[in-house]
Length: 152
Image 1: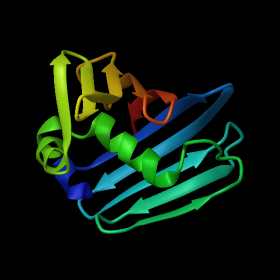
Image 2: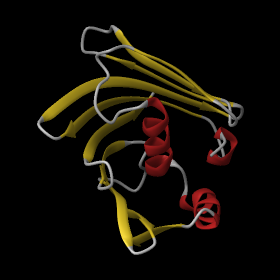
Image 3: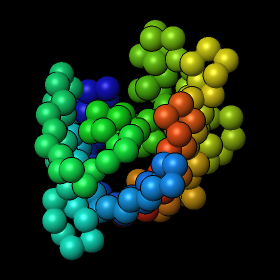
Image 4: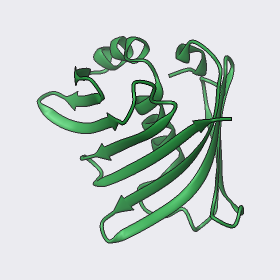
C-alpha cells in the first residue's frame, strides 16, 4: 500500500521482539510515514543499524546486515507493519481484489485470510495501535512480533 493510504503522517519509536522457531530477535525501530514515503530504520540495543527500509509507494529499497535473519525480510516487515497499523478501510478493498479477506471480528483483533486459511492475526492493547503494545502472528511463515510503540 502506498504511504499516502495511511491518511496522515506518523513518526513512532518501537521496540520489536520477534520469535521464529527457536530463535528470538529484539530490535528498535523508528517508523516515519509521510504522504510520499515510508521509512523504517532498525537498530540493535547498542544503536547499531540493522536495516533501513524505504518505500515510496512504488518500490522498496532496503539495506540489511547479516544480523537480520529468519523471516524478517524487509518487504515482509513493511507489509506486516502496514497490516498492523494501517486503517482497515484503506487495506480491505486492495486485499479483497487480490483474493484476501481482512476483518476485525472483535475490538482489538484483526485477521487476514486467504480463502479459508487464516494467514495472520494482530492483537492490540489499546484502541490506538500507534500507541501501546501490539502482537502480530504470521501463521503462514511461522513467526510472531510483539511491538511496543510510542509517538516521537
